[in-house]
Image 1 (cartoon, rainbow, N blue to C red):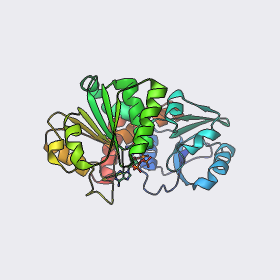
Image 2 (image 1 turned 120 degrees about the vertical axis):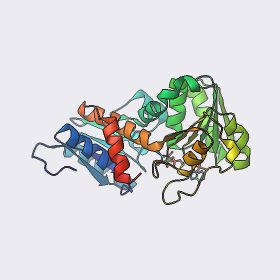
Image 3 (image 1 turned 90 degrees about the horizontal axis):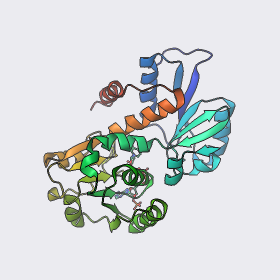
Image 4 (image 1 turned 45 degrees about the horizontal axis):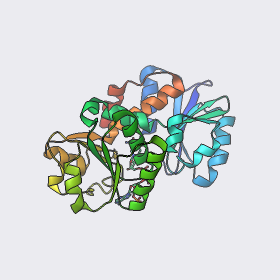
Length: 290
Ligand code: NAP
């Protein structure tokens, strides 16, 4: 961790509420140390009602850039001077660059998803995929799949089916993609859909600490050999879903990879410097005790 900083140390950070559980300060400050850069990454706990004033403060204090997390990822768009095309389509910003008071919003979760799935691009092309969840991160996942991976069918499975329906309509209008099918989350029905899917993604918090014994389906015949199973949950890094899928020969991808990849892109946007992915990923695993 950073043990000294100077009068001209540049500040980057995180704006959200609550932020106590975040690994971002670790990821960015270790990167700064490894690369011997003059930055410090600070967490700012800002409840929803204080967002507008907090942004004025970020500009006044010349904070060079910051991540945005719950509950501000959607609400912050109205305060941006500019928004990247991708963040604008998804309607969610997780990274802001402050260029002398001009705030530009980006969504680097897309890069996190893209980098995590890129090794399997050819496997996913033209196949059926399943996503559980229809919230903010599901939007980023669906956008990334349609734009970069072109699956034939995307099943959106959600506890509240209307939200899945809304995403289907949104993406068929916005991206002219007509391969989305929706389903209410009901584990016995998942067996057929999951076992026919080349890729399964959990974009819900199910399985996240302290409820790490939860799983979207514990039905073993949902998983098959060489299937790819990506859990956006990063704490614990190996969720119950990933362990069950791997025990049936599936390829597990941890949300921890996405977390470091999205951080790497944010860091690059703020500093023009590359994050040493492998070193940071290993340090984070040690830090978490994985
Ligand atoms: P969100 O916008 O609040 O959406 C949550 C989704 O999960 C909704 O579809 C919700 O269903 C569903 N859900 C919540 N609790 C559920 C339960 N007990 N059973 C079944 N479905 C449930 O959240 P989000 O921002 O998309 O985040 C989802 C997860 O992704 C979180 O765990 C977050 O930490 C993780 N994430 C990871 C990364 C990374 O870098 N690895 C990045 C972003 C997010 P309803 O529509 O029915 O409410």
